[in-house]
Length: 257
Ligand SMILES: Nc1ncnc2c1ncn2[C@@H]1O[C@H](COP(=O)(O)OP(=O)(O)OP(=O)(O)O)[C@@H](O)[C@H]1O
Image (tube, rainbow, N blue to C red; front, side, top):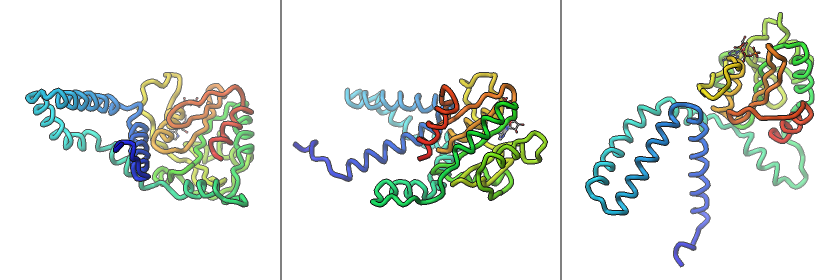
Protein backbone atom coordinates (compact mmCIF):
# COMPACT_ATOMS: atom_id res chain seq x y z
CA UNK A 1 0.00 0.00 0.00
CA UNK A 2 1.18 3.46 -0.89
CA UNK A 3 0.71 5.18 2.45
CA UNK A 4 2.78 2.52 4.23
CA UNK A 5 5.71 3.32 2.00
CA UNK A 6 7.50 5.57 4.50
CA UNK A 7 10.92 6.87 3.53
CA UNK A 8 13.67 8.06 5.88
CA UNK A 9 13.07 11.55 4.49
CA UNK A 10 9.43 11.38 5.63
CA UNK A 11 10.53 10.55 9.17
CA UNK A 12 13.05 13.41 9.03
CA UNK A 13 10.27 15.67 7.77
CA UNK A 14 8.03 14.75 10.73
CA UNK A 15 10.86 15.19 13.24
CA UNK A 16 11.72 18.63 11.80
CA UNK A 17 8.08 19.79 11.88
CA UNK A 18 7.73 18.49 15.46
CA UNK A 19 10.85 20.38 16.57
CA UNK A 20 9.67 23.54 14.81
CA UNK A 21 6.30 23.30 16.57
CA UNK A 22 8.09 22.70 19.89
CA UNK A 23 10.28 25.79 19.40
CA UNK A 24 7.19 27.79 18.43
CA UNK A 25 5.27 26.58 21.48
CA UNK A 26 8.18 27.48 23.78
CA UNK A 27 8.25 30.99 22.33
CA UNK A 28 4.57 31.78 22.65
CA UNK A 29 3.92 29.87 25.90
CA UNK A 30 2.70 32.23 28.61
CA UNK A 31 2.36 35.23 26.27
CA UNK A 32 -0.73 36.71 24.61
CA UNK A 33 0.58 35.28 21.33
CA UNK A 34 -0.65 31.83 22.42
CA UNK A 35 -4.26 33.09 22.21
CA UNK A 36 -3.67 34.44 18.71
CA UNK A 37 -2.10 31.11 17.72
CA UNK A 38 -5.10 29.18 19.05
CA UNK A 39 -7.42 31.56 17.11
CA UNK A 40 -5.50 30.90 13.89
CA UNK A 41 -5.59 27.13 14.44
CA UNK A 42 -9.39 27.31 14.93
CA UNK A 43 -9.91 29.39 11.74
CA UNK A 44 -7.63 27.04 9.79
CA UNK A 45 -9.48 23.94 11.06
CA UNK A 46 -12.85 25.45 10.04
CA UNK A 47 -11.33 26.31 6.64
CA UNK A 48 -10.18 22.69 6.11
CA UNK A 49 -13.60 21.36 7.17
CA UNK A 50 -15.47 23.73 4.81
CA UNK A 51 -13.19 22.61 1.98
CA UNK A 52 -13.83 18.94 2.71
CA UNK A 53 -17.58 19.58 2.81
CA UNK A 54 -17.28 21.64 -0.40
CA UNK A 55 -18.91 24.68 1.20
CA UNK A 56 -17.66 26.98 -1.56
CA UNK A 57 -18.62 30.38 -0.19
CA UNK A 58 -17.39 29.97 3.38
CA UNK A 59 -14.20 28.23 2.30
CA UNK A 60 -13.45 31.08 -0.17
CA UNK A 61 -14.00 33.72 2.50
CA UNK A 62 -11.85 31.86 5.06
CA UNK A 63 -9.20 31.09 2.38
CA UNK A 64 -8.99 34.80 1.52
CA UNK A 65 -8.81 35.69 5.21
CA UNK A 66 -5.97 33.21 5.81
CA UNK A 67 -4.11 34.45 2.71
CA UNK A 68 -4.11 38.10 3.84
CA UNK A 69 -3.69 36.92 7.44
CA UNK A 70 -0.23 35.54 6.63
CA UNK A 71 1.10 39.09 6.15
CA UNK A 72 -0.74 40.29 9.25
CA UNK A 73 0.85 37.41 11.17
CA UNK A 74 4.37 38.58 10.37
CA UNK A 75 3.47 41.96 11.86
CA UNK A 76 1.66 40.56 14.93
CA UNK A 77 4.31 37.92 15.69
CA UNK A 78 7.29 40.12 14.83
CA UNK A 79 8.89 39.83 18.32
CA UNK A 80 8.33 36.04 18.43
CA UNK A 81 9.71 35.54 14.90
CA UNK A 82 12.75 37.59 15.86
CA UNK A 83 13.31 35.49 19.01
CA UNK A 84 12.79 32.29 17.05
CA UNK A 85 15.47 33.20 14.51
CA UNK A 86 17.75 34.37 17.31
CA UNK A 87 17.26 31.05 19.08
CA UNK A 88 17.97 29.04 15.93
CA UNK A 89 21.01 31.11 15.07
CA UNK A 90 22.46 30.99 18.56
CA UNK A 91 22.34 27.22 19.03
CA UNK A 92 25.96 26.36 19.65
CA UNK A 93 27.78 23.14 19.04
CA UNK A 94 27.55 21.62 22.54
CA UNK A 95 24.48 19.65 21.49
CA UNK A 96 26.30 18.01 18.63
CA UNK A 97 29.23 17.24 20.90
CA UNK A 98 26.87 15.67 23.45
CA UNK A 99 25.22 13.49 20.84
CA UNK A 100 28.61 12.36 19.57
CA UNK A 101 29.61 11.58 23.14
CA UNK A 102 26.72 9.10 23.40
CA UNK A 103 28.11 7.18 20.47
CA UNK A 104 31.73 7.33 21.55
CA UNK A 105 33.15 3.88 22.11
CA UNK A 106 35.76 4.55 24.76
CA UNK A 107 33.78 7.31 26.49
CA UNK A 108 36.61 9.87 26.77
CA UNK A 109 35.02 12.95 28.29
CA UNK A 110 34.82 16.15 26.26
CA UNK A 111 34.82 19.47 28.08
CA UNK A 112 35.12 20.08 31.82
CA UNK A 113 32.69 18.43 34.24
CA UNK A 114 30.25 20.87 35.83
CA UNK A 115 30.86 21.44 39.54
CA UNK A 116 27.19 21.04 40.44
CA UNK A 117 28.03 20.02 44.01
CA UNK A 118 29.82 23.38 44.44
CA UNK A 119 26.86 25.28 42.98
CA UNK A 120 24.39 23.44 45.24
CA UNK A 121 26.56 23.91 48.34
CA UNK A 122 26.71 27.66 47.60
CA UNK A 123 22.92 27.80 47.11
CA UNK A 124 22.35 25.98 50.42
CA UNK A 125 24.65 28.37 52.28
CA UNK A 126 23.08 31.44 50.64
CA UNK A 127 19.60 30.09 51.41
CA UNK A 128 20.53 29.84 55.11
CA UNK A 129 21.70 33.45 55.23
CA UNK A 130 18.83 34.74 53.01
CA UNK A 131 21.25 35.92 50.37
CA UNK A 132 19.49 36.48 47.04
CA UNK A 133 21.05 34.78 44.01
CA UNK A 134 20.23 34.11 40.38
CA UNK A 135 22.32 31.52 38.53
CA UNK A 136 21.78 30.64 34.87
CA UNK A 137 23.43 27.51 33.46
CA UNK A 138 23.82 27.41 29.70
CA UNK A 139 22.96 24.24 27.82
CA UNK A 140 22.79 24.24 23.99
CA UNK A 141 21.58 27.75 23.13
CA UNK A 142 24.15 30.49 23.32
CA UNK A 143 23.46 33.17 25.95
CA UNK A 144 25.64 35.81 24.30
CA UNK A 145 22.65 38.09 23.73
CA UNK A 146 22.14 38.50 27.50
CA UNK A 147 25.79 38.27 28.52
CA UNK A 148 26.40 41.62 26.86
CA UNK A 149 24.17 43.31 29.44
CA UNK A 150 26.57 42.38 32.25
CA UNK A 151 30.31 42.09 32.91
CA UNK A 152 32.31 39.42 31.11
CA UNK A 153 34.19 37.07 33.47
CA UNK A 154 36.19 33.89 33.25
CA UNK A 155 36.14 32.22 36.66
CA UNK A 156 36.12 28.53 37.46
CA UNK A 157 32.93 27.53 39.28
CA UNK A 158 33.34 26.80 42.97
CA UNK A 159 31.37 27.39 46.15
CA UNK A 160 33.34 30.34 47.63
CA UNK A 161 33.39 32.24 44.32
CA UNK A 162 29.60 32.00 43.92
CA UNK A 163 29.04 32.99 47.54
CA UNK A 164 31.35 35.97 47.30
CA UNK A 165 29.70 37.19 44.07
CA UNK A 166 26.24 37.22 45.69
CA UNK A 167 27.47 38.51 49.07
CA UNK A 168 25.21 41.50 49.79
CA UNK A 169 28.02 44.08 49.88
CA UNK A 170 29.77 42.74 46.79
CA UNK A 171 29.70 45.07 43.78
CA UNK A 172 28.80 42.04 41.62
CA UNK A 173 25.78 40.77 43.57
CA UNK A 174 23.08 42.42 41.44
CA UNK A 175 21.51 40.59 38.48
CA UNK A 176 22.36 37.08 37.30
CA UNK A 177 25.51 35.09 36.71
CA UNK A 178 25.96 32.91 33.63
CA UNK A 179 27.73 29.57 33.88
CA UNK A 180 28.95 27.72 30.80
CA UNK A 181 31.13 24.63 30.79
CA UNK A 182 32.02 25.04 34.47
CA UNK A 183 33.09 28.67 34.11
CA UNK A 184 31.31 31.80 35.28
CA UNK A 185 31.40 33.83 32.08
CA UNK A 186 29.31 36.84 33.10
CA UNK A 187 28.03 38.59 36.22
CA UNK A 188 25.45 41.39 36.80
CA UNK A 189 23.54 40.14 33.77
CA UNK A 190 20.04 41.55 33.13
CA UNK A 191 17.73 38.79 31.93
CA UNK A 192 14.49 39.07 29.97
CA UNK A 193 11.53 38.99 32.35
CA UNK A 194 8.61 36.67 31.62
CA UNK A 195 5.12 38.04 30.87
CA UNK A 196 3.50 34.87 32.21
CA UNK A 197 0.50 35.94 34.27
CA UNK A 198 0.18 32.54 35.94
CA UNK A 199 3.25 33.11 38.12
CA UNK A 200 2.15 33.77 41.73
CA UNK A 201 2.34 37.40 42.81
CA UNK A 202 4.73 36.60 45.66
CA UNK A 203 7.44 36.01 43.05
CA UNK A 204 9.19 39.21 42.10
CA UNK A 205 11.53 40.20 39.30
CA UNK A 206 14.35 37.81 40.22
CA UNK A 207 12.06 34.80 39.80
CA UNK A 208 10.39 36.29 36.70
CA UNK A 209 13.83 36.78 35.14
CA UNK A 210 14.73 33.14 35.93
CA UNK A 211 11.56 32.02 34.14
CA UNK A 212 12.09 34.48 31.26
CA UNK A 213 15.51 33.16 30.23
CA UNK A 214 14.39 29.52 30.39
CA UNK A 215 11.39 30.32 28.16
CA UNK A 216 13.54 31.91 25.51
CA UNK A 217 16.46 29.47 25.61
CA UNK A 218 17.10 25.94 26.86
CA UNK A 219 19.21 27.24 29.78
CA UNK A 220 18.21 26.31 33.34
CA UNK A 221 18.19 28.69 36.31
CA UNK A 222 18.56 28.48 40.06
CA UNK A 223 17.16 31.17 42.31
CA UNK A 224 17.76 31.78 45.99
CA UNK A 225 15.15 34.06 47.46
CA UNK A 226 16.40 36.94 49.53
CA UNK A 227 13.00 37.15 51.18
CA UNK A 228 12.62 33.61 52.52
CA UNK A 229 15.79 31.73 51.57
CA UNK A 230 13.86 29.35 49.34
CA UNK A 231 15.74 27.70 46.48
CA UNK A 232 13.89 27.41 43.14
CA UNK A 233 14.88 25.55 40.02
CA UNK A 234 13.43 26.67 36.68
CA UNK A 235 13.54 24.73 33.41
CA UNK A 236 11.64 25.39 30.15
CA UNK A 237 9.78 28.29 31.75
CA UNK A 238 8.43 26.19 34.64
CA UNK A 239 9.34 25.78 38.29
CA UNK A 240 10.55 22.22 38.92
CA UNK A 241 9.36 20.71 42.20
CA UNK A 242 11.79 18.86 44.49
CA UNK A 243 11.78 17.59 48.07
CA UNK A 244 15.24 18.64 49.24
CA UNK A 245 18.60 19.81 47.90
CA UNK A 246 19.78 16.19 47.47
CA UNK A 247 16.94 15.58 45.04
CA UNK A 248 17.59 18.90 43.31
CA UNK A 249 21.23 17.92 42.79
CA UNK A 250 20.10 14.67 41.18
CA UNK A 251 17.68 16.52 38.87
CA UNK A 252 20.42 18.98 37.92
CA UNK A 253 22.89 16.17 37.16
CA UNK A 254 20.31 14.50 34.96
CA UNK A 255 19.38 17.71 33.11
CA UNK A 256 22.97 18.71 32.49
CA UNK A 257 24.45 15.32 31.64
N1 LIG B 1 15.68 41.20 34.80
C1 LIG B 1 16.53 40.85 35.76
N2 LIG B 1 17.66 40.18 35.43
C2 LIG B 1 18.52 39.81 36.39
N3 LIG B 1 18.35 40.05 37.71
C3 LIG B 1 17.26 40.71 38.08
C4 LIG B 1 16.28 41.14 37.15
N4 LIG B 1 15.29 41.77 37.82
C5 LIG B 1 15.64 41.72 39.12
N5 LIG B 1 16.82 41.09 39.30
C6 LIG B 1 17.54 40.86 40.56
O1 LIG B 1 16.60 40.47 41.54
C7 LIG B 1 16.76 41.30 42.69
C8 LIG B 1 15.54 41.33 43.54
O2 LIG B 1 14.37 41.52 42.79
P1 LIG B 1 12.95 41.21 43.46
O3 LIG B 1 12.97 41.50 44.94
O4 LIG B 1 11.89 41.85 42.62
O5 LIG B 1 12.91 39.62 43.23
P2 LIG B 1 12.09 38.46 43.93
O6 LIG B 1 11.72 37.49 42.84
O7 LIG B 1 11.02 39.00 44.83
O8 LIG B 1 13.23 37.74 44.76
P3 LIG B 1 13.46 37.70 46.35
O9 LIG B 1 12.57 36.58 46.82
O10 LIG B 1 14.92 37.36 46.42
O11 LIG B 1 13.13 39.06 46.87
C9 LIG B 1 17.25 42.60 42.12
O12 LIG B 1 17.95 43.35 43.09
C10 LIG B 1 18.19 42.14 41.03
O13 LIG B 1 19.46 41.81 41.56
